[in-house]
Image 1 (cartoon, helix red, strand yellow):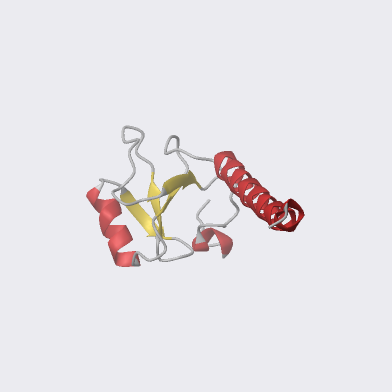
Image 2 (cartoon, one colour):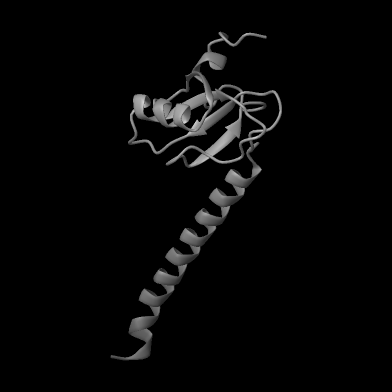
Length: 117
């Protein structure tokens, strides 16, 4: 096998790896820029894995001591009232995001104008 025959395949693999790396970097930067935390007076969306049922997500939020306000846009998203003394997520939750500035992205009630002001 001569070296020039292996070069195109190696170049394509390097380009694919670069695309994957850039995609991961952009995704991580987007997640880092979202309003996170459970402090303050804003409701919080707790995001569970998409395969988890709504009933299980609500049950896990209750088990963590959160006051559940409503379900989110997907069954695996639960909107809760924040508890400043509790910084830990319910078991199995991926992340929590404050709803301020998300304009209904995770909360179906806010997108429909049902959010009390």
